[in-house]
Length: 410
Image 1: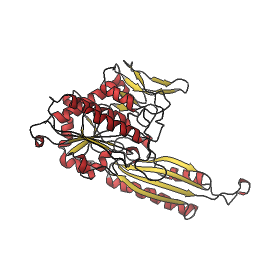
Image 2: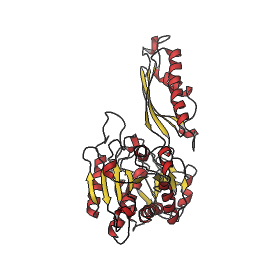
Image 3: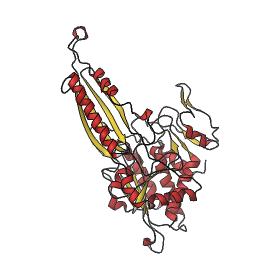
Image 4: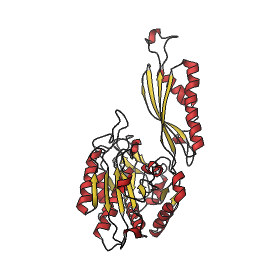
């Protein structure tokens, strides 16, 4: 573990707080602190000798190139690798204190005995495949940041290896780091043309072997519930409690939520709720892999509000909704060699691919529709967006090997 370049990178990066924020005014980046890691990566890429290193001062993107060292650059495609620097707003990323567990025994992991925070194998069965390996975990006070600093660390380790070993023949390698992926803004200002790749991969998946070229169709919806506040002592027949009305809406939707669904099953997810008797605002995400079912879900959401307005009065429930991204399978399946190449690169590294639909989205979803085909691959982490997040060192090292196999295989 002590000699692992990718682990060294990762342990350094997770200590930089880069949490994004989907509240307040629209900005990219949504938080200034994301620039701290972006500038660090910019400096490290310059130091290791990458070419065309640039930092988008306005929007916090980092780009770099490792030029082809083949006789002719046209002998191989230009392959891109993308990861995001931000971490989820769901759990604090400030003051991350990573802990390395060497020769993991395969059992439950006590992160914080005082607060009874435990990573249980029953909840995270992928831990069974990490027995005997080195794990990086938190102290239970924060998330870890493996989503997606594991991907960042792996891309940087790959770049360092290629630049230190010019005898390894490869095509052009394009590197990109994005802000605000966790809040759906990661590629709002991404410079596809300047990035320069023929196709790319987001290194933003889960456990070793994970390949995704299908994702949800996704929409974001804001439900605003208007009530009427009067003194509780004289409230009979007058008060309309917006908190209770909001829960009436939640209960009226089909009980298809993330905790009840898996695989290709879609869901309605209330992600945040705030307010009082007079007004409640609930933030939802609506997702489904199937486009027709996705449209049906949105219709059900709106119809539920309309029906409740008939019961509680016009204007009690108001919905604002917008699409976020679409299933990247549609453009990628027209050129499946980008997935086939990844399958070969994994098997060459001794890793059996596990192709599955991602129950979320990546920067690659929008990029694929914008003309840059971009499947997603594993990082060697699990438990994302929570205090139980962990990363496996040996699996991260395997991911670096897979990335190298992708660029030297031609």
